[in-house]
Length: 232
Image 1 (cartoon, rainbow, N blue to C red):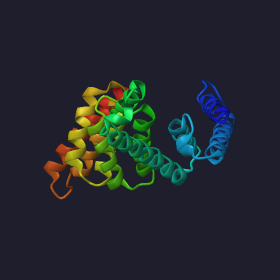
Image 2: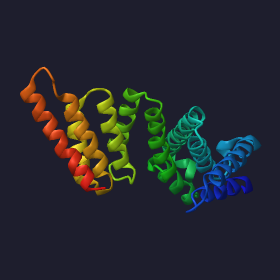
Image 3: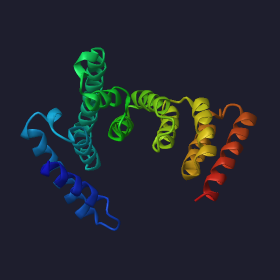
């Protein structure tokens, strides 16, 4: 447990306002070292705070650029949670198991339905790794699934932006415009970025061999670029 809290403290230190890049990197590496040792102590799935520890380790690896390790870590967090959920569902099918154990039954009921914050964030950052690696088809699928599953998550707007960028990268310009137009109205924080990619989509849609239509596309794009600049 001490290793978990040491890793947790190091991770939080890396987020401290004003911290230098060197100190931030040192804190993240200290987090990775501590939580890697925690995983080696024994069966991680049996340790207290194991799921959160696995997530923090993956996130720290992600932040220092170890994307492959991070991706495996996020996958592991999600897989472990799904396994535990299924075990809880199966256990609840046998009421006798919880005779005179109301607290344990309640815990199993919560586990069978809940998606803790570290699971939701693992799903988002797993998609983010795919995005950063340039596998936009897989990233699009992952972000779309995330948006559907977690419409009220604080990260859903960020997922929607990346979904739109994936559509642009895959040359699905009308779909990109549709997705990001919704986002530009729903998220003031990300509206400038959404408008930028909407503008880029209008430029990309334009066909230079058809001057009137191409000019109209460029004018529409310029309008969105101008709105994006106004929001800076």
